[in-house]
Length: 501
Image: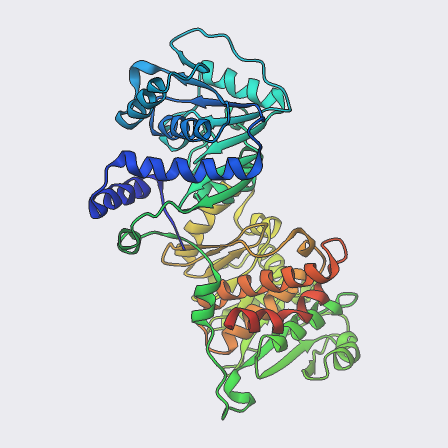
């Protein structure tokens, strides 16, 4: 699924109106019907509902919602602001409400008596949605704060008023309406995936309003949501006449004294993802645990007893380096030497990235087409301190292009940044996956797909989806509290099976 900018969505709206031969007010009615349906499905007619409508099309949506609720026996209190500046469609819906002679409809000019709002009430925010080009200010910030302090349940139409649909670095989040439920139309917005905006959005849901599929296909985007259909289409069926060599070879460089478990997890995950051969290069202290825990893997002993001291690139293998590797000086040197020699795409995770962060060697020694999989702290060690997800997002777009590598920025929503500037967002997974070893499992999954000759960016996008899907299956069985990285591994096979069905 594409994630569009506000400008793109307006163009798709217009194309839908033109292609279907309808008026824009008809499209607004579709949106309002979808919102009203959600409200009716959650609250009974006796529920007190207060609707704040702005002068633009978001306000038009809100007025149409009010009319539809009234038709179904609800008695919302409706306040319309800036009535002298109404958009054409908002003016039409205002007149429809006026024609009903509905008593609880107030048109606000300058000063008005703010209704008392309690935590038992439902507030529908239709002030601005997608229509703002500058920060919420003046009386609207006071209204946003009043709504927040009331502790009422807030439903925002399209977007919480004051939140920009893409980037909010210049915004003041405390002045934005804080929704408990955001009902947006047809597509999620990029801003939904940044952690700092979560407190403004609450739960969010995408409502289908039947925008033109042709216009959607024809409108390009740099942002995509990874979905099951796309991953299913990307996964290739197994050749019944193949042997293990046809499914790729992965060399895992992992483990150090006290952290051999990371190597075990990554190796097991790779095997569950279908790679034909897994070799593990590890210090001698990890040799017996690995041979015992992962009998399917071939284990190579490093000369070091407690840490890796050398990494030799091999042309026939996809190299995955980092899980449990440690940051001993000899390992840092080994990573440095390896990067100077490596010519084909590799995957670097965890301590491999921490070793690079401590090197004087430029990060652009990483081979082009490679994949790195940092979490936010590892990302900041590599690329400097950042204070928001949005800052990291923009930096990752820049660095992926500059270094010509794939960056997998792990988090509640994991981003996959491609060198061509396209960004893929993954929404599978759950809070139980925030557990030791989960990242090692992801490295094994992506590395296995790369070894099977999937393009690195494709392997990364499919890998994060499979990882999260397996995590969801594991959570169904064990719950989020009891979830371990090993549980995720146990569900990888089932996850791939279900995705491919």
